[in-house]
Length: 129
Length: 363
Image (cartoon, rainbow over all chains, first blue to last red; front, top):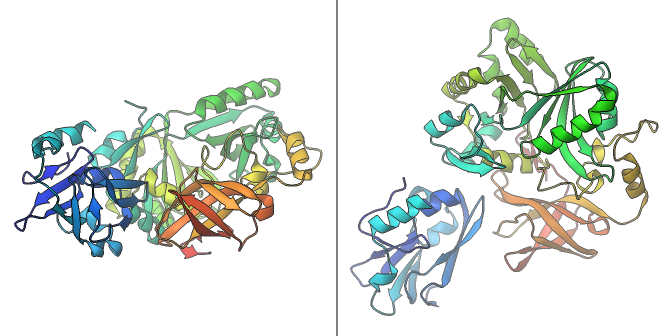
């Protein structure tokens, strides 16, 4: 059973999304995803200012086992990236929903609830997979 | 549900992440694979290798049988207790499996072969054994636990009564002995010192738990793979298989062409290959960039393309290492090749494995 915080939204491709007070969203990968990948050794983050389409690959997380793309759950512009991950990729393993965040995005439109899952639905998906 | 070793329930209770490995439900890690790796390089770790196949060979002609069956020469084992690493070949030189053979008694040898090749290995051995009157007896009732690392031997010995402990600690490298209920061998697959203990399944949980209590860390197949790759050891199915032969997979040293009058299965094919120019060689690769080489990636060289056969992130070197098969003309140590890592051609340097042995970086 992986940890699925109730206050976040999730994508089927295992990213989480946190809505922030300033209108931006913070994005990372779920506890389920980090556990499946195993120990992370490299994280490639996007450049600030890059415009992302919904579903576009914006980061690569590479573990001892495999490299995996991370997809934008919503469209928007990258406003900040977690540069600390370059030196400490294991932060994603240790704290996937906190210090392990990957980027902050200014969404280009209203968030579409249809494309994102709540904690219950995502938890069921993660347990099944 | 896959096949399970006698330790399966304990792995689950210890929090292991279980994966399918050749039809077996095996622990890949118990949390952090990298921490498990470092535990073996710096102190000691233990591995469940009960999925591997132990086969005992009995008969008055078992030695002649093994001299014909194996590419390495079992006659190199002069005394009971000695072990030999060898390939078992097809007539065309293709590798059926790699294995360890132990000389136990003049009419009794023990082979340990890979889990995924168990059925075809046993069938092949039994077919070849008929004319020698050798009986091939699988010992599926035994469990096998590897205890590896600089403190591993002392940790295991501390569980034994003093005479048995002394006997275990007296074992030389690549030797084994039956000590009480346990067959203890000073062998392994990590590049560190240690033991592999073959024991009745009923005693496996207790041994594991006692070693855990002494601080020996449970390690999964993930750490086993990064450790063996740093040690430059081949993995059957990745670095070699029936379509490859020992001379192109870094195992020429295991083929005993001398004495010249010893016939063994595959000898004729290997002699032809050995005399021919060209071909491929196995090399080690080191990557400077922050990326990870993986098996099946293309290796571009001045003499044509090769292939990464095993690649990973090395926890000890903190960068990517690989074993690769490349054209012999481009296999020189110190040369540079390019590996196609997720669509980017990255420079990699050719080195001679092992990358790490006994805790020391060698490249």
